[in-house]
Image 1 (cartoon, rainbow, N blue to C red):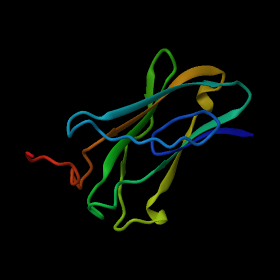
Image 2 (spheres, rainbow, N blue to C red; image 1 turned 180 degrees about the vertical axis):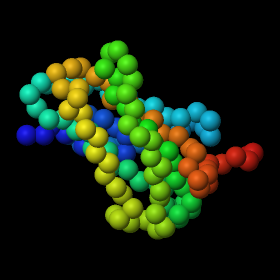
Image 3 (cartoon, one colour; image 1 turned 180 degrees about the horizontal axis):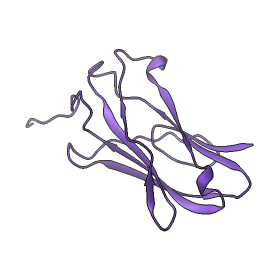
Image 4 (cartoon, rainbow, N blue to C red; image 1 turned 90 degrees about the vertical axis):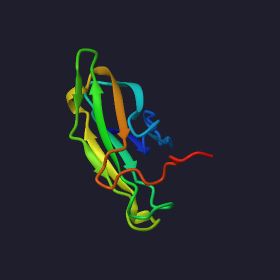
Length: 132
């Protein structure tokens, strides 16, 4: 049996979906979502994140960079960083599920970290930068 953590975007809750939103505070300050979880021994564990860029305001132009990591109380272990693309139009096909193997951390209490930042090749398109 695999015990999974399924989450649309970057909210984390053990055993059930949790809808969260991660938006960087600015072009230079990323958003961090952190969740402490117990990973019992003898069971396979994985983290599943369902992610999408924002294809509504600027289709095909609003990507972001996502890093996922596990802190085991001693060190931070990052999975490879990914650029999440928005797709060219709003639709279910623009959502993708990423799966991260947590088996090496079975039997431990860990912090799962999701870091979302601007910085993909498409740049920042949907943030207001002018004056009111």
